[in-house]
Image (cartoon, rainbow, N blue to C red; front, top):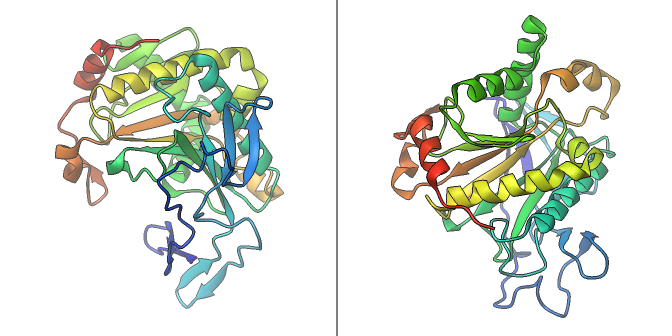
Amino acid sequence: MELRKDPITRSWVITGDDGGGDRIESAACPYCSEQRRYQLISSLPGEMWSAAAVVHPSPMYRIEGEPKRQGDGLYDKMQPVGAHEVLLENSQHDRHLWQADDQEIAIFLGLAAQRITDLKRDRRFKYITVFKNQGAAAGQELEHPHSQLTASTFVPRRVLYELRSCREHYSRKERCVFCDILQQELNQQLRIVEASAEWVATCPYAARVPYETWIMPRDHEASFERSVLARPANVRGLAQMLRRTLQRVRSITPDFHMVLHTTPNTQRRSEFQDYWRTIDDDYHWHFEILPIIGSRAKSYTLKETYFTPISPEHAAARLREAPVGG
């Protein structure tokens, strides 16, 4: 397997002939079995773990070695060096994020923040994120409640576009574009799904898929991991917002993608840090939740132009009316 860069879109793609021999093929859940069949990286809390990070059974990235970026004529390629972990959200097989209590979710969020912070100490890695593929249509790999974490030697293209747009907006107005968006959404109340004193769930103005929803802090904060670890008392509120939002989404469809957008690794080297010198002021971390509506899946993208037959305003209204519990 290797990483190859598309010279037109500037996207990195993992490609090669992967036999998939490392994948788990067992009727019994490897994370529930009394005989541990996984490599533990970290767990919280105490002896009976509530959330744990383990090595992915068939990782996209390998922690060993150097990227060795090199030219291939016109093209660029490098080794898929990085990290790929499974973040077990709960020790119980049937306690998903939308079913768990707020403390359990807060522990999971704290573990995610710790793992991102730890991996950012490795200067080879430019970007670390957490994502969740829920349901067969989303490509869910394991039955046990889990998310995944990846650390890569490049910044994914969509995140890079975000970072550049935020930097340009700040250079013109000396304000965070996400804070400006939040202020307008809260004033208009057309696309707000739910808002608390500290957290907001909203359908974006130009949603890419039906019922797309973002969760972000009301107050400006660029880094998810710094926000979670510096103010643990606030994480319960985020846990509640995440649980209730996923309950709303699952009233529409059981399948979705969820991805965390946070700051890149500005510790990587001095010139990289200088490039993002205003990032603490111009960026705003957030979760993006993209539901998968089976009958609409073919309409999600059309040559990089997104199409959704359900307006964000209608989606937000329906999500607000969805029953939530716990």
